[in-house]
Every structure is written in structure tokens, then in C-alpha cells.
Image 1 (cartoon, one colour):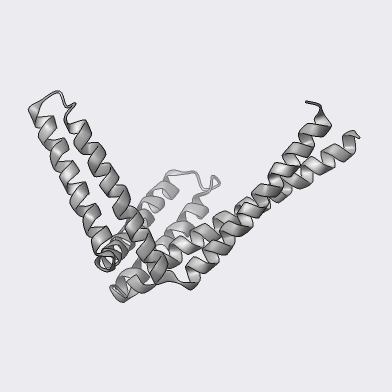
Image 2 (cartoon, one colour):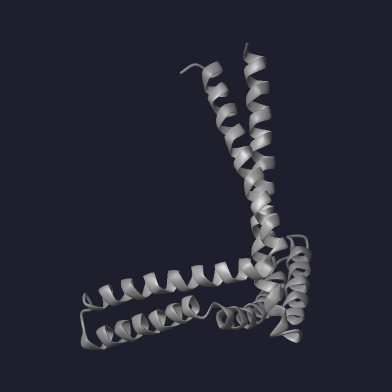
Length: 189
């Protein structure tokens, strides 16, 4: 394959990737607009993943070398299964529970980021860690102070924002790759 056809192929694929990024960003915007539906879908997804993990854990239990490890694996499988079925069967309660877990997790993340920030030399990105820690702490406090009513917006909005930024990032990077591939093709022609 010569460089001209290679750069054309890269440009074509980057064009599709840009389109996928735009579609992903649009889905993220819809998710932000409907945070409760997004939270319910996310809760059911997490519950389904736990059910799959429970089945895997139960299968792995039978390959345990000792009775003690078998019992632990069996109990973990049962725990994953109960949690997963509960989230799928009762997504409303799951949303409220996961929102509280999210708030606590953000506050714990803030503490860890402060520790990581102060373990770095001042010029090595300490400010970024500390700023991120501040935002994580504020968001965690905001979620927990308003909990359980924050369950209506917290998970859905945060998942939607993550999907939106993922799509924007993909579209921008793919657009840059496409532009560079076209420029390279023109320069080698």
C-alpha cells in the first residue's frame, strides 16, 4: 500500500470516527436532558453486570482448591447475585443507593487526590491534583447534602457529561487526524 492510499484510508476512517464522536456527544446531551432515565438505565446495567459477575464467581467456586476458598467464592457469588437482582428488580432504590455511594466515593477520591498532590513536587502537577480534589469534594458534598433528592439528577447527569465529553474528544481528535492525513496526502502528491 502506497502512502497516498494509506493516507486516504486513514482520512476515511477518521471521518467515520468523527461521525461516531458527534453521535456519542449527541447521546450524552440527551442523557443530560433526561438524567433520571439515564440513572435508571445505568442502574439496570450495573445490576446486569453484577448478575454476570455472580454467575462467573459461582463457576469459579467449583475450581477452588480448598473448601474455604470454595465457600468464600460461593458467598461472593451469592452477594453479587443478590445485589444485581436487587438493582435490576428495583432500579429506583438502586438509584438512591448508588447516589449515596457516588457521593462518598467522590469525597474519598478528593482525600486521595490531596495525598497524591502533596506527594508530588510543586512543579509536577500538584495544583491540578489539588484543584481536581476540590471539585471532587464539592461535588461529593453537594450530592450527599441533597441526598436522597440528588438521586434524581446526580448519576444521570454525571454519566451524560462523561458520554458527552467522550464524544467531543473523539470527534476533535478524529477531525485532527483526518486533517493531518489529508495534508500529508497533499504534501506527498
